[in-house]
Image (cartoon, rainbow, N blue to C red; front, side, top):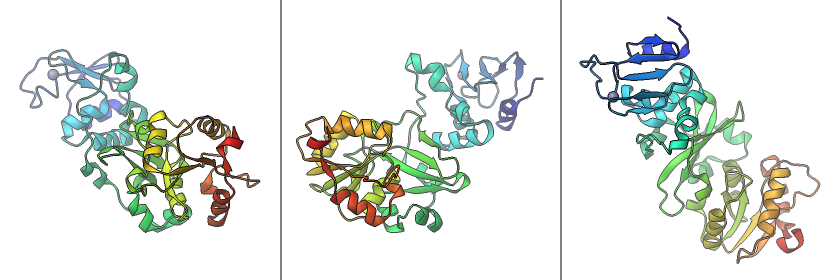
Length: 303
Ligand SMILES: [Zn+2]
């Protein structure tokens, strides 16, 4: 038998299989979980983790398999699989089924999924110069295993949880749960922004917390340099004016120019990094952030 980490995962899940090249063949863990049915109708690819039952249609990635067999939530299953077989394979379904508009029906997120996480530790908060009160206000969580920040992605109107963005303090890599969570349809911080206040628009959620801590406006994060039309509409609905404080790098500067060139219907100003050379506001001290806001430039002159 050709063993790899993924056949190890299958054994851990109690699946009795035989291999035909890269396909592990077994009775279906979904429609015959007690294995009373001996028919081999299901197979899983031991390189990708993509699986399919030609009898009942149960299919998906390795995480949807672990979810079904272990009776855990989808996000928990992603974490379980990620620890054993890697991130790419726990999300593999997107590449393989994306063209068929396939999405696992199991892909449901609930508030209970956030219970996996803890409050960020004091050391992590201090390293980003934010405080526990504001971390709580913005709903920021922490996953100790990978020392990563968890930023919930919520419906901007109802606060229903859609998923979250995770950023490891160790690898600096961003991940999204579920992989396709609609970040561009919301803004991080929308649920706590004061109506009619000045929006301080940043890319990364932790910078939104930081921006709010200045007391000069409501920090809102777009989750990236490409700010969507939906996000710009949300800012206009929520806030009386906006200071664009995207990252001070080529992508952020392009994103800023795109916003400055638009008529949003509210005053738009651009954060002034001056000669600081900072990559984003997270690199600046509190006074420097305040200065950048005070010295912000009207979008009319930025175009
Ligand atoms: Zn089946």
